[in-house]
Amino acid sequence: MAAASLAASAATGPLVGLRDGHGRTIHDLRVSITDRCNYKCVYCRTGELGAQYPELGIEEYLRLIKLFVGLGISKVRLTGGEPLLRRGLVELVRALAGLRTTGGEPLDLALTTNGHLLDGLAQPLKDAGLNRVTVSMDAVDAATFERITRVEGSYAAVLAGIRAARAAGLTPLKINCVLLRGFNDDQIEGFARFARQEDVVVRFIEFMPLEEDRLWTPEIVVPLREIVARINRVLPLVELPAREPSETARRYTFSDGVGEIGVIAPVTQAFCGACSRVRLTSDGKIRTCLFSQVEHDLYGRMRAGADDKELRAYVLHIVQGKEARHHIGEPGFLKPSRSMVHIGG
Image (cartoon, rainbow, N blue to C red; front, side):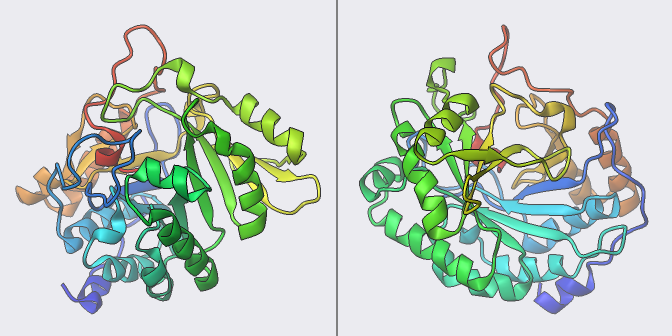
């Protein structure tokens, strides 16, 4: 569907309000538009790079996203896999940028990428209406980075993409680093310097059991306290206040006020009580938590002929059942049926 037609179909419904059964307001939708990826990061995936699950058409993602926006979603993040692999991405962004929230404001529209193709797409995405980008990057030296991605030349490509995104104004530009003890935890101090040198927000993420292989153990997790202590020894930090209750990262600036570090600690300091997120997989399933054991087939209902009123009622029902919290590290914990690359970050 042409971009003009997509945008013309992007009117939202009336305010309904999206709240779960625990009283949390759900305003953040993560949408995977592919589970394909051009990297094969050793801690993430062991299978083939191609899609494991079907992908919807761009106009179908738009229709489903519109349903959520009409129910009160104000933040949409496009993810994968690697979303920059999807044809029609710029047109989808342009159509989403034309949406308005139930309060009449533009959507807060973001994208998470590995950055490999970002150099050539940063400006077109900005021109289409994308607000900001998060780049997944797990090392700041080329040898370690390429050992992780298993793609030659990947470090140079990502660094070029980061600089192109910053030049295009896709800011604040965030860099997400998943830390694994004995694997890339030697990068912590280097990332702190990188944040200042490249004018980006570096966010360290505690490793969660979402990989395809059975790599995760509690011992491999590098906890928030250790990350902050190690940076403090070389570049003293000052903690910043949270900007909103549902913010996932603990935020810090350096003592001279130049640069920002964040730590997302879902394992050692879970933030489930303020969770504001729901996810839509590349094949149109609703996941109410990263660690959900059940998926809800929104696209299947749409394909069977359900109208928007019926689909909105279904979304409201499913979100009401959102889990109170995850159970990482507890007896009986089960990994989700999909790994992170197939869920979408």
